[in-house]
Amino acid sequence: MSETIRLTAAQALVRYLGAQMTEDGVPFIAGCWAIFGHGNVAGLGEALYHAQDTLPTYRGHNEQTMAHAAIAYSKQLRRTRAMAVTSSIGPGATNMVTAAALAHVNRLPVLLLPGDVFANRGPDPVLQQIEDFGDGTVSANDCFKPVSRYFDRITRPEQLLTALPRAFRTMTDPADCGPVTLAFCQDVQAEAFDYPESFFEPKTWRIRRPQPDPVEIEAAAALIRSAKRPVIVAGGGVHYSGAYEALEFFAKTHRIPVAETQAGKSALPWDHPLNLGPIGVTGGEPANGVCAEADVILGVGTRFQDFTTGSWGLFANLERKLISLNVAAYDAAKHGAEPICADACAGLEALWKTLGDYKADVPAEALKPDWFAKVDPLTDAPEGNELPTDMQVIGAVQRAAGENTVAMCAAGTMPGELHKLWKAGRPGSYHMEYGFSCMGYEIAGAMGIKMAEPDRDVICFTGDGTYMMANSEMATAAMMGISFTVVVTDNRGFGCINRLQMGCGGAEFNNLLDHTIHEAPSAIDFAKHAEAMGATSVKVGSIAELEEALAKRAGIKGPYVIVIDTDPYPSTPHGGTWWEVGVPEVSERAEVNAARAGYVENKKTQRAD
Image (cartoon, rainbow, N blue to C red):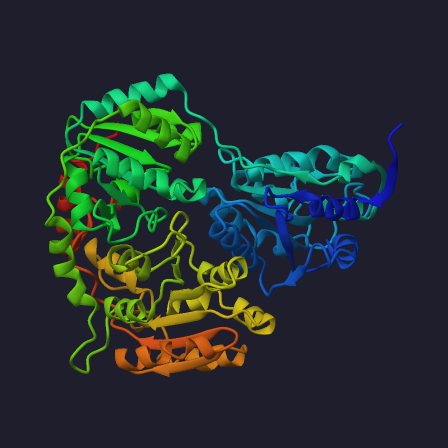
């Protein structure tokens, strides 16, 4: 008979987390973010208190943003480690649903541990309990079901014996990776059970590399051999596989150019001869021009999101064929692609061996020089006294950046401008959450990146709109002494969506603060606000002052916030492609009717297959 140990369910969960190891010999769960309430303070809170030496607990200020920090941590470490996040029942739990959706879309591991109702139902309805009139098993945590890769509700202590291995299987499976939610009934957290001691023995979770099916490799290779103008679309899976050398070798050997998605950017250095740069709606002319004429598109670790494909209008060659190399079968079979369901690195190596001496026609050498001749001047400092553009802000940060810099962002104007303009060097130097494009990820994400790689110089781009949505973890970073730089571009509203509104023929309405209902003009002092939360902050009045402020960041401990007013209207006029946004069929505005006509024409280029 095996030995047992009597523990509460919460104690058992915490002990199990501390025993699950990576291949590098460190715990896979690097720590737990926690905001305690009546649904988790007595059970999980007590258990975490006694495990601080092996499982540190960090206190955030908002459940959503502390989960963002945990997700950014894992993304920066290429899914090799993760964090747990616990909240109370009710609003604390539902605050995390947005973060769960972000992790689900981006295929990133995070362990969410929301408190739940009483399993015994004795005190029902408890404070913050959602009651379903027709289903007694429902709680607020059912909101997590569609945004979790694995969901379980722990209603008995012994259920952890099956639920926890399933949770770690999900978080460490490259094909099924994503958020795990274990809704933990608050009475069960405190109940004891005689657990087998073997359950807590250290276990190493290896990140497997699924090998490709030889039949799939041969079918894909046959398509590539028939191609004269193939192109590779590098996605986030290149990073998670660590397939940098394999991608570079494959592209160089077969002379196939590479385009980068938002998630794939920095897979190759920006100045690599075969790196054509950004693709799609936020892409540049080199990549988009080649993709429009390509006869075979090899996607490597990409979901083929609409921003990548120009809403499936970018790949315009009527004879084009699609190959999708992806560890997830769901992604590998999208849009009639010839699938290679495998690890990115293993798939590229197998393709290389099968293709032999095949070489494609090399794109014109002038594509990249012509592109940079157009866009580099946009990042130069302005000569007059006009408000600087976002492009000029990027230029200033680029000039201040070093080899160790990580540029990060998530939503609004900056993702598109950074995708086009930022010159990413080493892998991991560009961290963009654009799968869910979640406003509010930026500040918490910057903190998570710095926790993952303390030696990196992390620079966060955020707009005033995003800053207002979620800034509370600035105080957390200040208290924890976590150093990163935040550049706040204040264009007085939602400048990106305002431009989209105008581009669809709409009048400027309810986006910029000047076009909203208010009695007093907006006068938000972001520098003072950041200072009040413990950050070092400064408001600068020009690009020259921004560069001076950036030069001081190395000597500053904790978050450093630089605020600069920017012009909400200009954007990079070069590159890009169509993006489908539904334009009204009927309108009193001539501008909308004109935009609708353009929409109808663009729909003709869209391919469903």
